[in-house]
Each structure stands twice: as C-alpha cells, then as structure tokens.
Length: 500
Image (cartoon, rainbow, N blue to C red; front, side, top):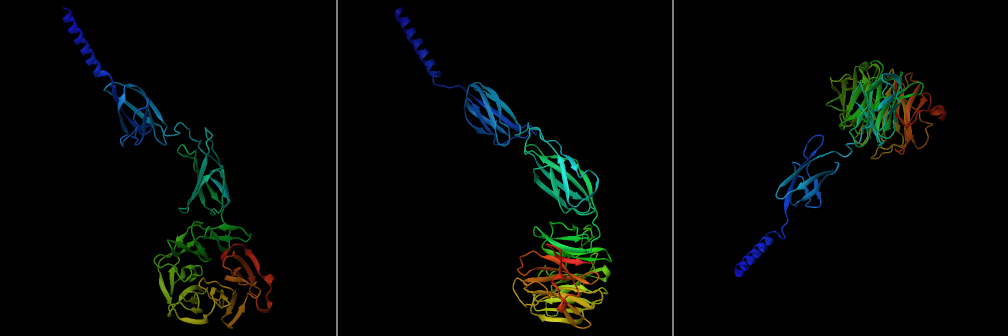
C-alpha cells in the first residue's frame, strides 16, 4: 500500500512539473489597430507617427490612414498620434490576449481652436466717395481675439482695364497708394491673416478719383526700370497716365482726335498704343508689324492725316496705319538698307521728315519725302555724330533737331556734345540754340511749343548715367543772342517731352 501511494505521489509531482514548464517564460500578447483621419474633412492621414505608453513598437499610418501594432503585451495603453501641422491626440486602449483592439483618431489642424481675426472694417476712402486724390490714404480696422500678429493685403481694381494693384505684407492699418488714374472708379478690399486661420476679407468699397485737368505737356519718368507716362498741367501738378508695371514711352498727343499715342513693350516687341488724355481707354494699334529700329529709346513715330493715321518705322521701312488699328501700308523703304529711326509729318500732311542711319546709329541722314516716297530735300547727309529729335514747325518751313557736334562714335551710342538746331527750309540757314549749354551736357528730344516761340527739351550729363531734366528755352536764343538765363528747368527727373 505504501508502494502504491509512493507511485501516485511521484506521478502527481511529474504532472505538476510538466504543467509548470508550459507557462513559465511565455508573455501573453494582443494587437492594436486603428485609423487616423482629419477632423474636418474625414480624409485619411498618411505617415502619422503612432506610439504607445507603456512603450511598444512605433509605426506610421499608410495611405489609407491605417496602422497595426502587433505582439503588444496585454495591458492598458495610451496610444499617441502625431504629425506636423496637426494637434497631437491620445486614445486609451486595453490589449487582451490574442485579440485586436481598435482605436480611431480625428486630428485637428494646429490652431484649429484659435479664433479668426475680426472682419476688417473699411474707414477711408468711404464707400462711393468722389473726388479722391490720385495719392490716396487707405485706412481700416481689425483685431484678433488671441492678439495674434496680423498682416494685411490691400487690393484695388478699376472699371476701365484689368489692372489689379496688390500690396501685401502690410503690418499697419493705414497704407498710402500713389499714382492712381484720374476719373477712374476704383474698388478696394482688405484681407487680414493671423497666419493660423484662413484669411478674412473685408466688405468691398468703391470710390472715384478726381479728373485730370487739361494738360498740354507730356513726359516720361523711370519707375522701377520702366518708363511711365505723365502729364503736367499749368499749375505744375503731375498726373500718372500709365502703369509702372509696363514700359510705356514716347508720348505724342493729337488735339484733333484728343488722343495720346505712345510706344509700349509687349512680350519683347514694341507696339503703338493710343489712350485718352486722362490715361483711360488704352488701345493697341499695331500687331503683325511692330515698331523697330537700331535703338528703341531713339525711335520715334508721328501722327498723320489730321489724327486719322500714324506713321512709324520698322528698320528700313516706313509704314502708315489707321489710328484705330488696321489698314497698314508701306509708304517708303531706304534703298541702301539704312534704318529709319525718327519720323515727323507736317501739319498739312505734305511733308515727312526722316532720320536714317546705319545699324549702329551713325552715318545719319536728315531728309524729307512725300507720301509717294519721293525724296524732296536732303538736309544733312552721312554726318559723323549722332542725329535725332526731329520736329517740323506748324507751317512745315522749319525743322528742329539735335546733333552731336563732337562727331563722337561709340558702341553704346554715347553722345558728348549734343546741341539743338533749327533748319529754315526757305533760307537754308541753320540756327544753333545750344550756345549757352553747360559743358559736359547734352541737349536732347526737342519739341516746338504750341506757339513755336519756345522749345522744350531734355538736358543731361553726357556720362549717360545722370538723371535727365526737362527745360524750356525761347527760339530766339542762339548765336550771339544766347543767354544762359534763357534756359529754364521745368520738370526734374523726366524725359521724352511733348507739348501740344
């Protein structure tokens, strides 16, 4: 009997040892799975970093926003989901043996709890304001609930063209805009951003600028590398007529049709445009045959047919085009291939004055032709220095021009001693108007005044770097009667004058 119990005891002990060997050293595990989406759109988020506390494996969500962490010890966990530009989120989960525990995250964009700035309230110009000056101060108000730093964007557009003026990264609630067009109806709006929420737009206000008074003098001024056309009235007020964002130059007014013609660079080509005296109603005139020459800063064109047409050069050819566009015809071509640089048509439409030169701007001729292309008179022939700036008198009996008396030539077309001259067709006499010109300067771009008692012109240093200024001077100046006091500065930092 003792032996029987002995064997039972041994067998039970072996069984106990065997069971103990099956569990000792084994860890019970489960799986955590889940999905991460954006809170507002419910779109899945990829590459979200998933970690747990206590620590287990680190994984990232796939393109469906899903993730799986396997072989996680049974326990209670806090699961963390984090990705840039979103608020980090946590979810609690209990892992049980052999089972999959699921969690879901809806992540908010960073700052989602941050409130938007207040809607900007427009103060000035008031809605529907009239007679606003071309330099206008814009004022508005806005605030932020969290006192976030605010930046503003001011936009203006008008009822005349597609130009949009946009001023960004404004830190204040006041901003001054210069050079608005006269007589335009403008619309303005302010956008505010706290760099967290979507920008907030103000209401839309409108105002009208005051009309430009009658102005007889036109000129250009460089702004950020572009020529910009201005007018100047008798009180000395200046008014911008073209956008600083476009290169517009060589204004020429015709009083018969009350239009200003000018040149503008479009996609690398120079074309003729017209506009109203206040800068409105811009219209491109040339298309397939642009304006061209050896140097576009020297090229000029002319009104013809009492404002019904325009005459312009394209290298060795001279064209006439309707001032409303179309009807382009060839009226003259140089026989030796010289370029036509400048042209002016007499008031009676009988005479065309031309300056021709080689591709470097030299060996220039000053001559007149008729509309049949026949040469009438060759005034200057194959001269050494630079020739330019022609303007016929009202009766066509005189012509005003410039000539570099130094005869200097250079690859940059630099002039050293450019002077004003008048040639009288009846007497065949030349009058030098620049006898009192300061040494080291050039007189350029002359035009007769409307009564032809004066000339308007540009004077500048011959270094080709200094600013240009516009002067006036009586026609009777010159030869022995010249006096330095006759030269009066009219407009600083300006060029290409026209006086009609």
